Amino acid sequence: MPDVDGTDAAKQYYTDVPQTSKRYFLKGSDSLDWGMKNRLGRIFNPVSGKTVMLAIDHGYFQGPTTGLERIDVNILPLEPYADTLMLTRGILRSIIPPDTQKSIVLRVSGGTSILKELSNEALAVDIEDAVRLNASAMAVQVFIGGEYEKETIINMTRMVDMGTRYGIPTLAVTAVGKDMVRDAKYFRLATRICAELGAQYIKTYYVPEDFETVTAACPVPIVIAGGKKIPELDALRMAYQAIQAGAAGVDMGRNIFQSASPIAMIQAVRAVVHDNEIPEKAFDLYNTLKK
Ligand code: R5P
Image 1: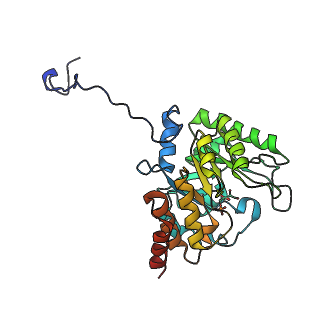
Image 2: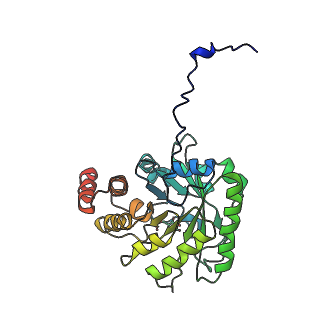
Image 3: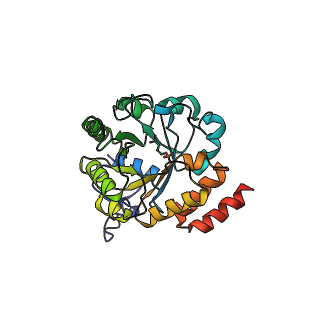
């Protein structure tokens, strides 16, 4: 065959330039496959290494949560400021415009309600549907120490196996039962078990004491849930302290969508997470944007 695109002399092979090979920016993720890294890179910002996930999946076990009664009205205006939307497939298909540029973390465990034992979950979404919905990760609740501990761990490992087949990361969500002590010792145990069994990243709660030991002992990225609504400055302090202690971002719901000004709050959270802004300055930003 003749050389159709020009002469050999015109080509440049840069034979003296070694091919570069960049390490992947996320902790513990360098050995993952290309598709999985690409999806994680749509959740975590490769520049800051962090993420602001907007958690709006609460309805999967507790119905129309305060602030989420009308996701079209209350949440769609926040979408431009989130890195990722964490939600159920029902809300995704019925409310979220398919031309969104935001990555999707799909809630895939379920099967219980606030009326019964919450840890009795199963996998409630098929991997094929996660592929169909172009999910960047799948979230599974894991109840370490809960009544159905083993079942929820196996839910997670099954999702890790299926996700690995298709290149979709699994987010293990460590759920804490009402009677359990929320301390660093518990979260070291819960997050480490999830990481050891294959979760590509983990969501947990922040605790003020020794949280850096939780992130240090966990070989993959940790994001923190926001938890119950607290005053805005306190929520910004929590996010700041978590990031300074090694968290790779937040998966925050109520402290954003139940804020007096959710649009101002999510931007203040972004400043803390992506720009290392101190809480007081981020709170000033919140107050300025609120007006
Ligand atoms: C809880 O049901 C969900 O996993 C939420 O996504 C998680 O708790 C984060 O939301 P929040 O910041 O409101 O705790």
